[in-house]
Amino acid sequence: MNQKNSKKLVSDDCCEDNKIYWPPLKAIDISSIPPPPVIGPGGNIIPTINRYFYIVTEDIDLTTGATLPANLFSDDNGNLVTEFKIFNPNGYVNLYINAVMQEGGAYKLTVDSLILNPFNATIFAGTPIIIESLGFQQI
Image (cartoon, rainbow, N blue to C red; front, side):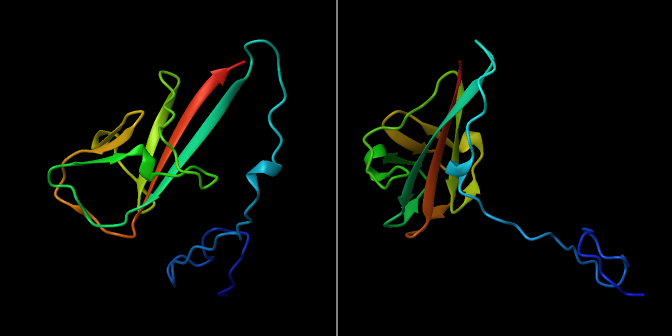
């Protein structure tokens, strides 16, 4: 029989069409999730997340690298920023260009700019650049 079971991830007969059936995803509003309960002194680690957004307005040639000042970016509320919050040493930064996470060695983030290392590529106008800065504090 060639019946598919939607609760299984792989089709019943592996050789016919090799399709994978994923259960439907449901998006949730992250603000509706309550914070974790306080366990005791020194028992919780609380994350802080800052995100910065920029849509490239003109092509960026990376053959000699590029520096993008912080004031090109806006925060989660759409407000322009003057500097990036960097959590050092208890945090890290991720860079996404066109929704693809970049290798850590491809860039450097300072308080006032994003420095993109030289690479034989171009970032085209209209491309989104997202910086995600995460920090952790023990309470």
